[in-house]
Length: 295
Image (cartoon, rainbow, N blue to C red):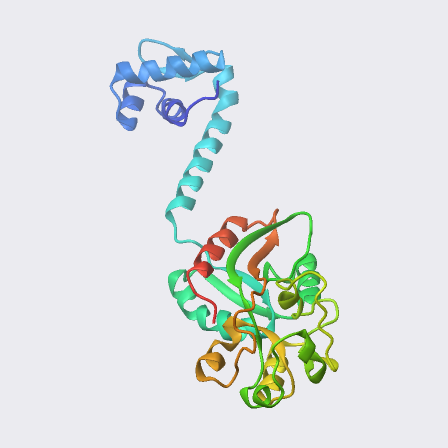
């Protein structure tokens, strides 16, 4: 059995005073209770720790061997206790995010998050999904926030918010051209992001199998902000995240040509390495981020 800390404290006190009664007074025990402590410790380690006389006690050879380790163990226990009671040391977390989400949602939260946890400093790192994943691998970011679909070993995914989408166009252009079915797509320009991550797939996922939407042209602009700007200018139709265009939909500067269409959705997730030294803190941060709606 491992010796308990209180028994070690009694042992060190007795080694110092060389007298059971004075040592018992130091640790606040009766002489009988103190003797029981020392006897139990000797039983646990299987050695006699003191050579006793009627007036004093001195360390045995085994006691002399044990004494420096007992002192070291008690000192370590005090340091451990201090770690629980002292003010937490400040630490930094770097969050990777895409430009639009970082500006519209994360940046306004930095102040409240810092107020809630003054010891936690948050930094933002902007990039597309590939750049963010590479930064995670290099240790340049502690976590990233993304709705991109990818599979990777050794990472944790903490779900934050559902990302819903809408097919939208400028009302003036829609009034001229109309977009009621796939048959009308040939008169429209589709604005999108990347060939490998097209937002229009969220619309197609909710359509009947085999339904073909062939547009006059497809223009890829790389960022959600660029796509939204061009749609507002009447330059085409696009699928965009609802959180990003909810004000335009409310004002009527963007409208949904097929308001009953059911688009698929994704989920924003906080992604971090499973072996991260602050994995518990990242899980706590994910819970805090879930409390703030997307905007």
